[in-house]
Image 1 (cartoon, rainbow, N blue to C red):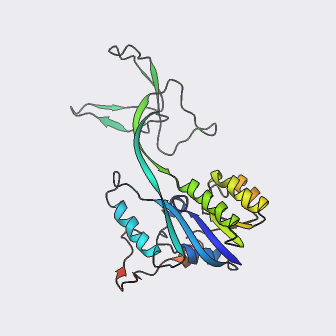
Image 2: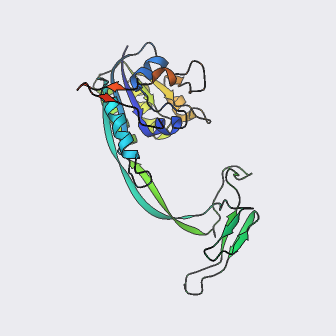
Image 3: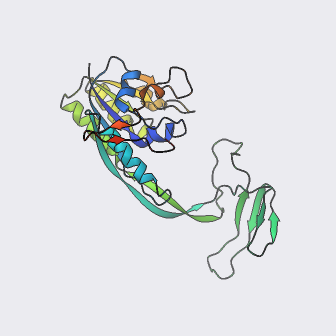
Length: 266
């Protein structure tokens, strides 16, 4: 079964980043999960990370890219990362029952609840606001939390990946139309991929295996409905872990004969 593999790199990374298995050979992992696959191409969709939050992150990622390049079937497709700041409502200030000390040494302790923030007299548009105080790990009892309409706003730094999901979708459909594979393997749990998977599976009649990264929420049901097959990537804590069985050696030997060592902490 001639197979092309399409990997949403960051979707997979964030699912496994705390499992100690990031030094991952994606081709070997796919062969572990779908033994019948004869893999001819692995398209790995990702973007170069910024060092704004972690100065060492770009270097570690580049080492991983070098390891990926030792697998002839792997092709890396790069999107972009957009760094920006936005004003967002604060849903929770997680400092309940913890002492706050200012630069003058004064201390204050807040109990859980909504703090009322007075109007800023120097701003004509200022209105009273509320700031919910709680603790880390304490979500809303009523299900998915929602920001209060009069919640305090904070300027937050965000990193947004652009292009990977679109690139994956375009290559998946294009390769299918071109008849390059008998079966496709999609490694993602991103529901933005529902329509391209549906087109390939239902309109073009190709087999599409959905490989769900490990996570507490399981496979997204819209993806399961359109894929022809579903498989779960077994996480690192299981005896028959697909992740642990698919790690690159340390070091990997590059084509120039030089060792590529796994980054510390991976």
